[in-house]
Length: 339
Image (cartoon, one colour):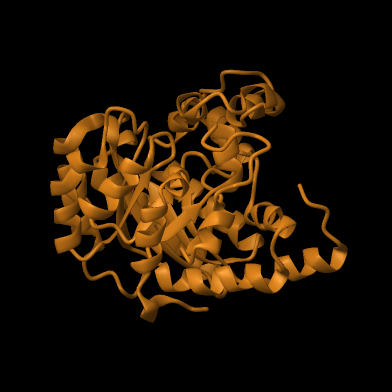
């Protein structure tokens, strides 16, 4: 972590930040998960400190691969199967982001993995929106939106069902928090973007913003497919894109934004420890980027921490400029934004 002066930290804190890539299940504050576990009699350990070890990636687990990283989502899913809990965690995540200076917040959410206790996908979405609407009402200047995720491993057919549900929940919600985008996530291997072309066409016709996890644990071909076959305007992670100069030119030409998640990429092994993060290569080639946390709890990070990592190469003004430009790539309708 680059050393930052008190003045630099104050300046970073003052930036109105844009968060375009943050997952619900990987970002629930530890104390909230612990409280809900105990309320439901689900706590697998005796203390909150033990619970934290189950929720936060440990040093010995870093770099072990995406699947190991995704294992940390197991326990939060125990408590996000209930309507009131989902609303509560959404509210808590938004408050935590707001405290870090986030004023434009896009939350990612896979409703299909929140239906094991009887909720419908629609109820799972509406409960999340309820919590975010509460946060917006209480926190001055905060604007939120939801990107609905289809899980790769469930295949193209389920993805189409989820896309239709996302479109249905995204229509006509311009005066409050709504569904604004569509995404695919989960292990890339064996699940190339091109398989999900029809789901993305449904989302596109329904007016949703399009993004996709690509190039995190597979090569640049997956990023090409996300751009050419899915028509995305943003790429989640996209680390391997720097291996292909023609792809870099394409991303810069079409101004396709990379949702850069620095700490997470080191944790999953998408970027090896000691290597410079690809975000700086993207910036050098004119590819737009946004600075994202991915999973604040799993990676034990925050917007402020992610921005501090940039101080190794960038000035405060350059970091502020990244956030200013990221606004143009948000899927939240301009008329809803309060900052």
